[in-house]
Image (cartoon, rainbow, N blue to C red):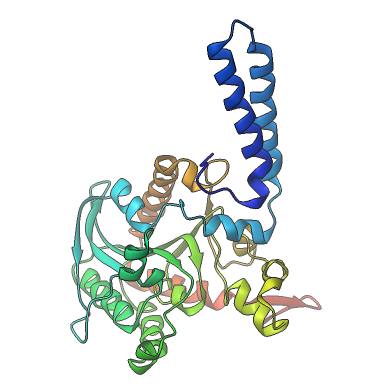
Length: 326
């Protein structure tokens, strides 16, 4: 349990952990045997953890996805890939530090990595624009996806953004157009594409690098057409209603798989990825390698046909035993 930042629903666990720490300190300086009490308290902590994390609601999962100690893209890149060499610039306007791109190897395979990156400190968040991409970020990503296609390299994208940057300068440089072009072009890129949602997946800002053959999502990540706060502001004119919006939006990895939006859940350690980054990174790597091995067996036509059909199926629903497109 990270004691620097505790979510509201985690406080019962945190309080028990504090009691255990005090008990251990007393046992160290006292002749009294506290071993039974310590064992009992440890058991209670584990039971409380299982109870709390086994029944998280949609808003609680959003809170974990936004946890300030949650691993970001570069944390996973450092653990999953070898020889990562970052590449910069969109060859049109500028570089975007919130979109980290480069070549690397994974399990002996050359990979093009495209990743959305947040910052932890104030200075780093300003540099990374709080994980919100500008048009040049999406254009840089597309430039390097085309480069990957040229050299027959698979593409792996890491999605973690509250949404594309909505500032005036972003609109002036046509952020909506840059995302739209990415959607069109990614649908026809001949390299296998895997997208991994590791935290927030906000609207078109996430989709701009997620038109993929396989969409994988961490257990406590989310992918939504709008943030809970944005939805609450529209429906109730009050962002305090964000928990209700999260419930209405059904923001959970399981629902995304049920709806066919995501293909596989990558399970996290108890309490979230920030409790064991190495474990989570290894789970992500195993999933990437597993799916790449299958995708690399497909010829280009089969790959693109399957990608097209995958996205055509999203939004299908049944009425009176007939299936129609939404």
